[in-house]
Image (cartoon, rainbow, N blue to C red; front, top):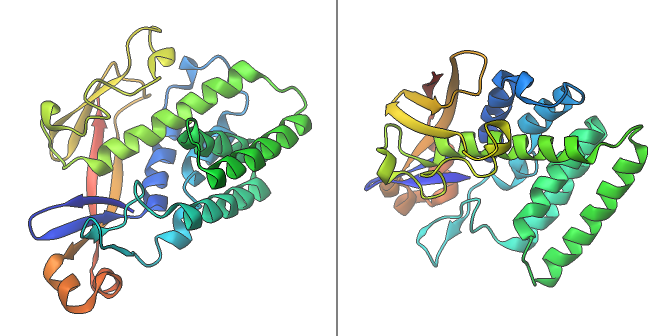
Length: 253
């Protein structure tokens, strides 16, 4: 889950719903900013599906007693998370090998400096998956793969920017991940400056520069889970009883 806390409630967004927004961002990206259109549709598929691993984990939210909040994607227990990461990547690979290669690289980037033995085992297994997929590609292009990996990360970050910030947040109050722009997006711009987004109001986000073909809108699905309901019935039942809501967000020039 992606979670924002208010005084009275938790705003909760499923990871797979967030990933759908990533896919929409990828679909509208100016493909002429890429070196080639080769594998572009596979990249879009990867953006839509990259958080498939979280479908089971987000089915019933779990309470974190240490933080007195529901577990989010950033603090979810490692062992079950790794198991579901593998399960999701296996499912993606059945549908699209190149997409699973990109998603595997994306997941492995979370553990680039790990010393945990379970994470290291996960990395070894995923590197084996990556090697096997590359061997089956007719013409593996490592520069293109890196380009697509960066674009997947950018699309993921744009969706996170939308979901993790309160709509309409002032630039200096945004989540620190995004105040200075989207990391590693420079390669799609001038090589020096990242793309920067800013909330124009609660329903509009503007980009500088604008990397999409035209303005487009996204539908954010979320639940507002009242803290009072959690106290009465627990997080799982309170989440189940909460109504799914939607908000329209426009991405504009």
